[in-house]
Length: 145
Image 1: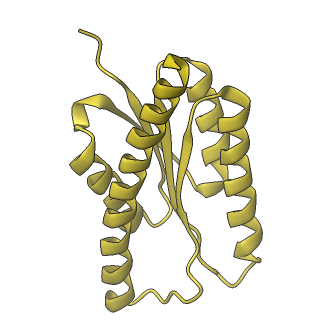
Image 2 (image 1 turned 90 degrees about the horizontal axis):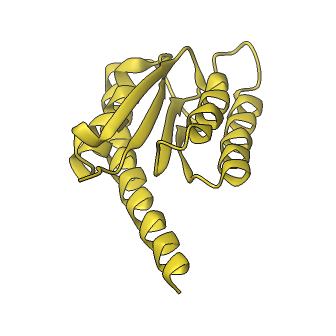
C-alpha cells in the first residue's frame, strides 16, 4: 500500500513559534506521512518548496514562517515575496503549496505575544493540513470526471 506523502517546510527564525504549526499539521495528517525540512528563514521557503514539488514525491507541501517587523527593513516586502514565491511554486509545478506564513501587524517579543502566536500557529497548521486534504480530494474528483 502506498502512503500519501506531504512535505512541511519551516523557517528556523522564531522556531519556538513556527514549529507549533507542524504540531497542528500532524494532528490532522499523521506524522509518519510528513517529511519535514528546515530552512534558515522565510525567504528560503519558495525555493525549497519548488524543489520538493519537482521531485513528484509529495501530494502537497506546507510552508511555515513568522515574518515580523525587526525594525531594519519593511517586513511586508519579505512576506509578499514569500507568499508570491510559494504561489508560483505551486502553479508552476501543479503541486499544491500551502502557506502558513504569517505577518502580524503588532508583535512584541513578550511572553504574552509569544504564547498567543504559538497557539495561533497550531491552529494555522491544522488549517493547512485540512486544506491539503481538501485540495487533494478536489483534484482527484476533477481527474475522475
